Image (cartoon, rainbow, N blue to C red; front, side, top):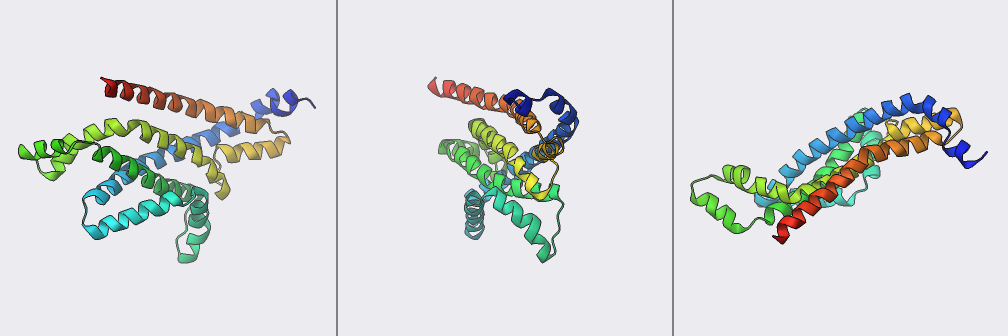
Length: 224
């Protein structure tokens, strides 16, 4: 068999495409939900780390450090296989979503923190001088500026989360990678894996270009 028949078999790819598209939908759903929850959780963690009482700050720092150091795959295996021993049973989708969200939130928290700390102190003082309370200062003055700064790294982190969804195949979630490996086994041909790789590229390349565009735009603003 030549390389085209082995890795780029059009007939095998066509027969496996419905299965791959089902897996792609689950990958998008898992990645999108994990990204959204990670963004919300990361913002809450960042605010706790910066402004909460000291014991809560210590807890948030410990959480961020632990989950940034913990490999996603190891944490996913613990959530799915170890949690049932303490009475917590989660579906493969819920386990993968929990693992991705908790790790993503830790990275996102550090991104938000860096963005908030990049805002000049005078912005806080000016907002307080016109009578805004702490909540309004953060919501109306600080966060809108900080978000513009952190959009490139947040988008980059979202790409990493979407790529990490492939780890969900370890817990038998029929995502894109799992469907591709099953199609490969049925066809006795690796072409479905090539098809999965192409679908990942179609999904993630626009996000990669979006990051580059954000970085270029931000750099041009900084240069003015």
